[in-house]
Image (cartoon, rainbow, N blue to C red; front, side, top):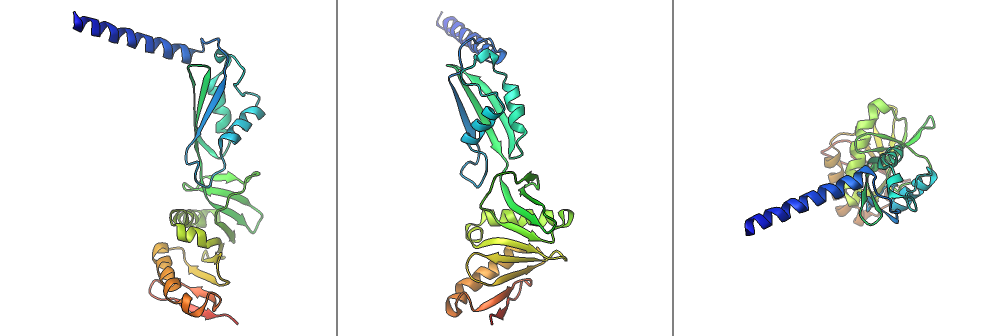
Length: 243
């Protein structure tokens, strides 16, 4: 008898859950939407999408759900509208009991801002996806100079990801300048020297050598001793004295 009662209760609970889910997803809910809860992934990183920004996008599109009947809210329309923003990677929107709507956002995080000689100004993420600058500004490294999308994109993404993943260098390097030959110079936030990286290969090794140079030599000679530090070779560092 006890086993039968447990089985009956489990079946009843399962039936209720199926009914509740069907009601929420089918739109058969006349109650009023009282609140929207936003969750943005990686919100602690340098990104552009915040809960306030998503809320603003819904208001601007005229589809903000608060105050509307739950059965009049089309979650797919909300998802499709938000996906049009280049900084949003994916969206999941679903209704919850009590007149609540949940919106889960996965954002695209830029790793480099590109400002080219011919006037292009845009961001790229870790997958090389291009995002228009719009009215957003992020405190990330800026790549300038003679940038060729086909030639330089992959290496700029690699450099941007390296800086992002290494706090010391992320705080130290503020600009990457690309030459006509595709070689790169790094402009630091501290010191007046230019760091000549050369071809963008062996990045980790070259910057490891440079950090050792910073820690062992710079405290002795001063940060303004040199106008250029050449690290294009992995087995030596060549410095040019400032005038």
